Length: 196
Ligand SMILES: [Cu+2]
Image (tube, rainbow, N blue to C red; front, side):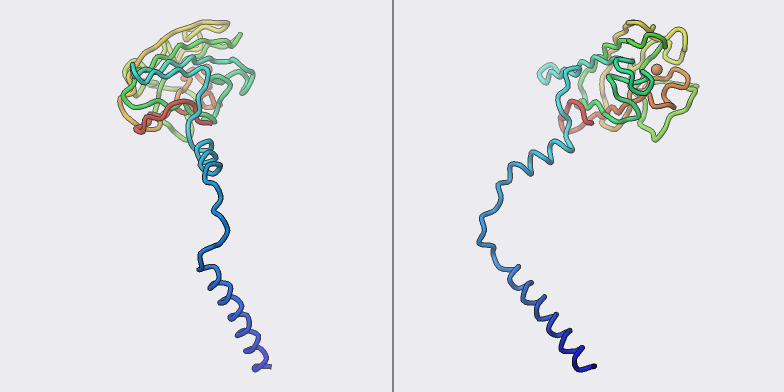
């Protein structure tokens, strides 16, 4: 028994060793074209163009047409159909960002503030102060005085002065805790667009 097992083990070792030796040799087959793999990598990790995000690299500006309640996703408590951080707007660091905010929810007031990214947000905000000066709509924590339902609008402008991961959050009570926020990434690589 011992002798036969030894022979089997040696035989298996010889097979693996032989295979490894062949693998070390240069392959005669032509290398696959690299283009498809490169495109796939870009699509899965990079930001894509979106028709509601306009970037002017010459002027170093980004204009975001941010709409609350444009779809019924998350009970209309969404930004351009996204909630729970499932998408992120990406802007280059140092750019001037204008958010043209519109509330198409027929019922609820909404708002937006650029806050530090977090795993979750509280139901009530003592302080929804934005991370960048001016990056908040008026009366942002009010259920009755934020941007009005049925088409209310407000524009805000600020400078995305520091690279990092932030979020566009609605600080109206109970909205952010139930998912009314998306990511807002300030890139130091010049990348811009929508990552989803
Ligand atoms: Cu809201």
